[in-house]
Amino acid sequence: MRLKTALSNIALMIFSLAIAFAIGEIVVRLLYKDVTVLFPRYHTDYQYGRYTIRGTRPDAEFWHTSIDGSWQFVTNSKGFRNIKEFTYNKPVNTFRVLSLGDSHTQGHEVRQDFTFSAILERFLNQHKPFAEVINTGTSGFSNAEELVLLENEGLKYNPDIVVLAFFANDFEDNMKSGLFGLDSNNRLIEKKYEHIPGVHIQNFIYSIPLVQWLSENSYFYSLFFNSTWKYFKLKFAEQTAMQANANNNTHTAGAGGFEFAVSTSATYSDYQIDLAAALIERMQRFCANKSIRFIVVDIPIMPSLYHFTSSMPAALRARLNKAHIEYITSESLLQKFNGAAEMHVPHGYNHISEFTHTLIAQELGHRILLSSITAKQ
Image 1 (cartoon, rainbow, N blue to C red):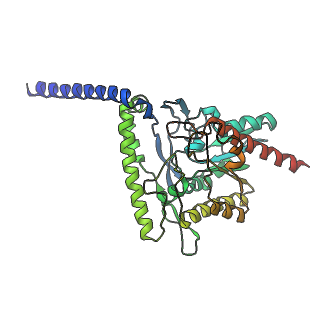
Image 2: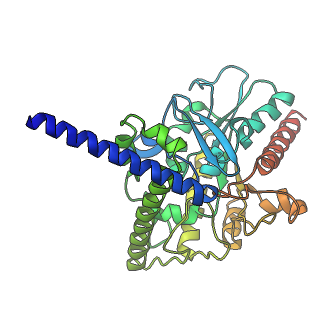
């Protein structure tokens, strides 16, 4: 009798929760559908040498949805947004490019075949057969994590060129990762060997049946999850800011931090700029020692619809120039379209549009082909 009563109570509780969830779903769809994004985070942990960092789940297939559309993501066995697999041993006569970056590089709010990596591969194969472009972009990545991936995993693919897509939130994300810092002489130092924010939680919740379906289809669930995620991200950023202030490494980009869009009012301390520059310089030296060409791409910020600004302050550009690092400015790519073209997706998280991805790929392709022609002469 007691068992029957207990089972009845459990069934009633489940039914009540289901009704409450359904009501919540209806309310959110009616009131907040246009401003709610269904962008599930499918991170897990990867071991790269002595480092443990996050990455997108391997062999995954999922969707992102907002008022602007729906975009399918497919990852290979390494968690990269590539349908095909890439062997470490580069096939004979194959030309390889390795793309490093965050969600802009990965291609949030962009179709799988229209990231700059995918477009660049098609462009090169029209002029330079047997080209492969490996898109290792990962949502939330900092330059620190990109450096770790390059030195411990990316090198294994024997790339001929490494492309680093730099975005303004890298300044803050480098601080939040805590993987590297600067000593009193502004030299880059290793500080810790693990950065997997939110990964343990994701590993747990995605082991529960129906959670992945909810994350891609339920506006109520997404609003709740995104709000919770943002709360803890803000707390983590505040802790980072407090620690930086305690170490006299003051930065003024805002304690809130950001994962996707960046306000044009953001400013950066000397420490943040020096840290970003030191990380990029180490990537460049690493590539140079392996006879790999290294190119940095300036991913633009969206101050308003149809307008852009650069992610690179003058001080960072000066450091790149001093180190003789090749980089592509957002002005050289987009200035002629400023105020006219849609360079970012207008809603959601305002990632760069397929138009901007195409311009980046075209410029990279032209530079690569020009260097090939020059080398033959």
